[in-house]
Structure formats: C-alpha cells, structure tokens
Amino acid sequence: MEQALKRIDDFEGLILRQNRTIQGAIGTLKDIEARLDSKLSMSLTGATYNRWGRSSWPHSNNSLVYHGFAAGTVYSFSGGAADYQCLPAEP
Image (cartoon, rainbow, N blue to C red; front, side, top):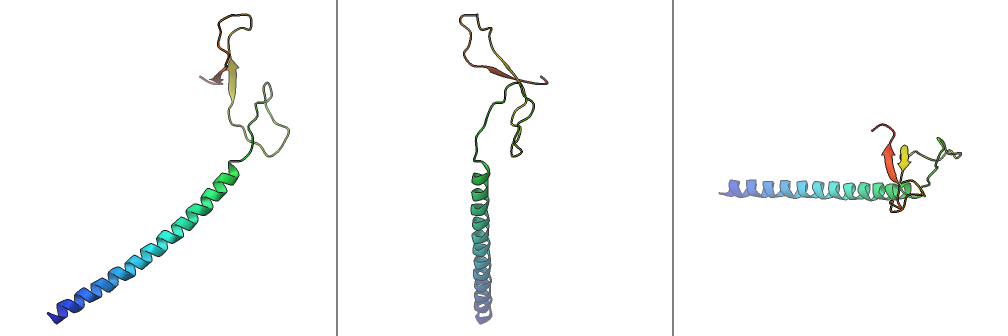
C-alpha cells in the first residue's frame, strides 16, 4: 500500500512538472504571437493607389496588388453601372 502511495506521489510530481513546462511553453507562444501581431499590423499600414495606364510606380517601396483591366459601360450609354469591373489579364 505504501509503495502504491509513493508511486501516486511520484506520478503527481511528474504531472505538476509537465504542467509547469506546458504553461511555460504557452507563455512563450503567447509572447511570439504578440510580437508577430505587432509586426503584421506595422506591415499592413500604408495607402493603396490606382495607377491607371502605367506599368510601374516611381517609388521603390511599393508592390503590385492587382494586374488586369478595368471595364465599364460606354460613357454615353444611359443606365450603365457606375462602378468599373476588374478583369484579369488572362481570363
């Protein structure tokens, strides 16, 4: 009986150590997640501009978001949609 109680105590100690290890890993992962969220929010700042009829932008810190064509109804056509339709370069 005493040996069984000792084994239970040993097992309980093992579980407590594993729990501390897991809690430490969770804390580390939460810290990493917070740093990644911070970096992601910093990288998502900025403005988006349409550069109609151009294939490049004069500034170096930019990236192409969409490449294609904008299509709409003829200007003189009454009843046409006000918004353009974005069409891919290769349908």
